[in-house]
Length: 320
Image (cartoon, rainbow, N blue to C red; front, side, top):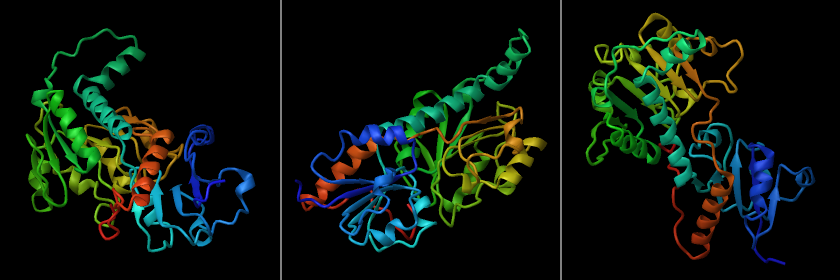
């Protein structure tokens, strides 16, 4: 029997993915899986680590012996904004597979809009054979990425490989080789050069509702795509959906690809579902691979046991 203290798992993911991943995870440590009904009344006071995604609010009151809390995703706003938390390290999920998936979604959507994907999909439904004459190259289009953390930095590099002119924005100045970057003081200059705006910001007090009519109206209107395009795979709370919808209807925005929303699942009566210039994906841009998540947690626990510092610890002041 292991003398190590338990790790508690409370993940609102597809149940089968958690069960499957747990078969090979944490082989030397007891696991309390809160998704299993037999764990409902378990004593959690001995649990040493918690791996969570939108957990039961009672968890942190019951698990009084925790040393660290691991987020089940790259974002941590689901923890910081919804719970009364103990004074413990909170660890973001950083993993190659998650990063790659996010960049794939961003590149896919940028190419889709570049190559008239919405128009051609409509023509296919109507059985229309018509080649759109105007076809700009990627080098003609400036993609502006807001959020230059792990995900944003990878996305700008891969967009650059595809030939796009890429610029980046973060609240605090960052330097990325080969990429022109902007900070809070130069946001308007960044927006004025942007044809496709990519939102990869974390959700904090500063970023909540940042994507609104005032911001969209500052995007470049004379670019080769006929008007600005908005992509958001960061956090739904960063966009004001009522204003976003109106901007898509009146031409302030030419089109959008949206993976995150203020309320999820996106309500059936949302006009975004049926707008012809909108692509909706169900918060699937960078779904967490549960096996990769558990490997990440195991690696960080091993650091603790070796007397090393945890990596990817959230700054609670900044929110990421």
